[in-house]
Image 1 (cartoon, rainbow, N blue to C red):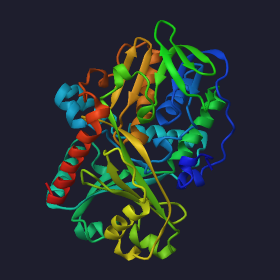
Image 2: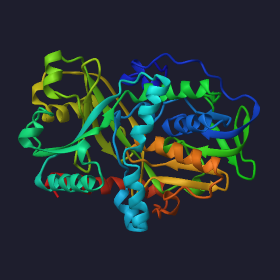
Image 3: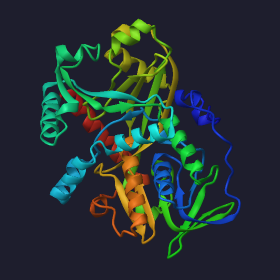
Image 4: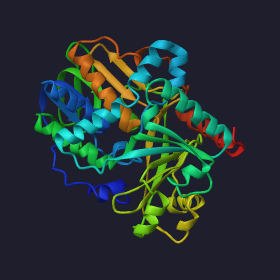
Length: 428
């Protein structure tokens, strides 16, 4: 278990594989690449770079997987957030990229699980479910577009009756089944990749908060205990860092989301509510997501908010949602509940690129981090290996900045979220 007060109610931390004690940075050292952040982006990038023979160090303010990588819903879904927005900006170039990489993150993860024998309860199968005809029309459009691009064999549409065989709830009008999607124990995946990276020579410094980055031909990462001088630096901290505020501040506001996990369900109950063990999310703007764990619990997430205030009674907030979806669980209680921050850019396009010639950054996956972070890790490795000047196509994306975000940003986003909740209720 990860020994950290913020993780004491986290199911993943309670069921994580044993982790080694890793030192803090307490010296001045040199590597080919210094990575700030020990979540999926940092660890995936480190493993990709180490496989190519580069010397790599990761510096993490807490522990590997401490942030969203060790708290998320565990869904490994195809596609990206912000696809439509970036296609509108860049046209065919962005569209080609998104179709080419739709399941690339899944492929990378699955190959690594096999190659490095990572035990993380990886299971194929996902579904997006619709509450109304408008949402179902959108899923039908997605299916048709995917079929045109060669993915029809892994997707299928289900009407209300057919969906009941996958999700034992009467509240949906249908859904899109995705056999290429998957779910897993994300913290154990991140820890397993970190262990694999260390075996290839990557050095991980934990409990090391970076205070600044010196840019230049040989950038330097600085902390209270030491420095790392490198040929390249990757800033992979996402929603949990405040570095490079002049360049990155105001474009991405942290959103809080929450997850609860039930007590173990009777085997027949678990099999009856999700017969083929799909990872499910609904098609609302403010969505719920859920799946079974290997020990027969229901993991149920949602309640995303931008109001900059915590839900103090997570169980009380999540139980009505779970029981609305599955009334048959009316007597079931939660044993674990926790929350965390995810990074969402205002236009939902991931923010990826160069802060300077040899300092790269990535943030803002908008809930698609398990899949997309692994693609970005490969893209970073390609850029560094090839001395590339652009991370295509994200480097050319135009993002919107909220001025004085600490004063008006969160209230503005909270107002926007209220608008989307209203759209959900009205079915538009």
